[in-house]
Length: 440
Image 1: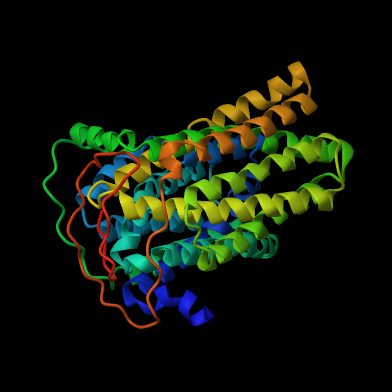
Image 2: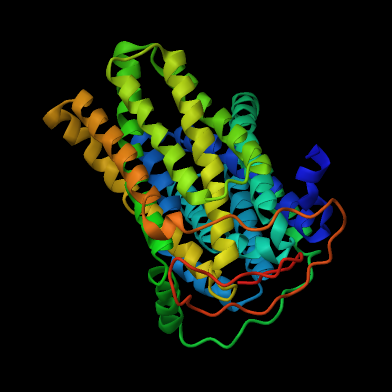
């Protein structure tokens, strides 16, 4: 299969506009992650202040995710995305102004971070639900892989570029660049035609309950979300204790940065593999592959040389990025379009809910039973949860759908709506074999 064929999703204009918009947005977001802590420190803040600004972003992102999912299912999704981009862009522009003029205060940075997190709570479920509205169904995995590639490439390049800019000019300029990327993203989204009107909705609570019903009606969905929650809980222990081990027994921050870089590069490779590989049982294979992530905390116990640990991180994030593309595609293919954003919001909420708990308990647990024992426990959770979810009957029944069509411009056409709940949680109705457009 040629490279041009694997990039066929970019031949479809609607997806090309969406991909370009999300690429600009990903670049800005990856850069501002470096600017935020240095902005807090620049105005005299402490490490606690840095944590407060990050928390101000995360709390509304989690709290409003379900609200964002409901509204993304009610309104044209690109309108929700445009509004979220503009609101976040204005917030970041305000951040640039107060930092560059020297009047910034901690509460202002926290408020701007909260605006950013609130916008992301609406943008994320809308964007996931909008992808299948822009690309033919056989190219859906391609489309998700391409978005993953750009996001993961910028996750490597963006922080390095931001570090240079912050060092040379200060964090205010990076806030300004982030604001500009949101404006660019919105300018591409505006060029997309509005989606079809949504079906009639009930009140907010009823819509939320219906979204939950979509999750619980499919064993492969709720089992996967539960698995992601456990995986992130265990990974939090690695992220907390890894720097401690690196500081005491390896080369400190330099070696910890090398370990994390291995994972970032692995994410890019994993997304590239998702352009090429289409396993017949995508979730079963993907979750088994992710079980290898247990190796990284195990290697910290001794610890092994930093390059060995970084290589394990590379492999772990190859499998994670690859599998997340398969997961995203499975949701988009099988969840009815009118409920997809709500299901995505439950996915994000469920996946993240235990991670703060993991951050909080990792230190006290390590003090109680030791760092080595805690890392072994984290490795056991990563391995056994991956194997357990892979063997779940509903997960094993999910099979790959059609191949991408030959390279050509495909006119995306609507297909009939799927029933709101599949009769069998592991079995879904067949899709038409021709290129089609699925709306959730």
